[in-house]
Length: 257
Image (cartoon, rainbow, N blue to C red; front, side):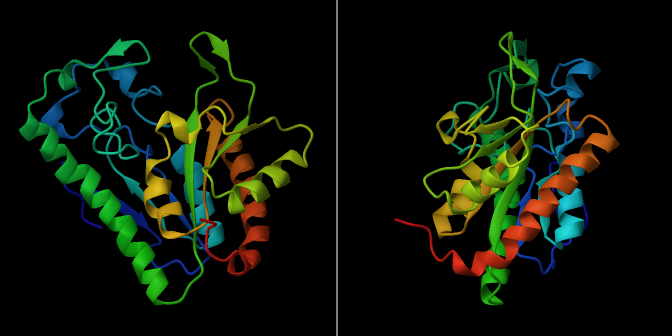
């Protein structure tokens, strides 16, 4: 699809006929030209502050092998975080992971509105359109978000290789957790290292549970998916899990109230 400099939606395999729709909210570290580097050195743009390293590669494998649409915003979360409510205090950060983001300081209302209009709104409109088209075609659908997280936060190591994040609707999450925990070599975080209370569940709450669709967020520790071998290993593990779940989606029914 054609890209705009101020932050396009990227849709891969948009007509995929599988049972899942994959989103990757923090796939890109791209900063549109109009923002320069946001006052940051190049090394910062390669770090977790700017994106979720490894997440897009895993998401693409899932999209290909599960025949799933994959949607992601081609813009760094430092410009605007598409996985945040428009009113969230960390929608546009002025500091992250102890590093100031000079280009985001003292934004006027017009610039904030511009970023919402050109980045946030098209991304979520694209997800809405994809899900509406599938609903009209009578396809059973579950929504999966792929993210990655750092091995250490605030000086504390994070022991989980993978985390499963979910809200009150546990239909999909419980099955994923059970499958992951069947391997004793895998340390699974249950609503770790984040939970919806950390404001990280916006995309899935808006498009998944908000419409009765099963939804789950997968967080993979980024040292596990720092190279193609690790990305392939975790993608294969998740593909097996979701492929086994897919035939059961039609029996899940609507989310519990």
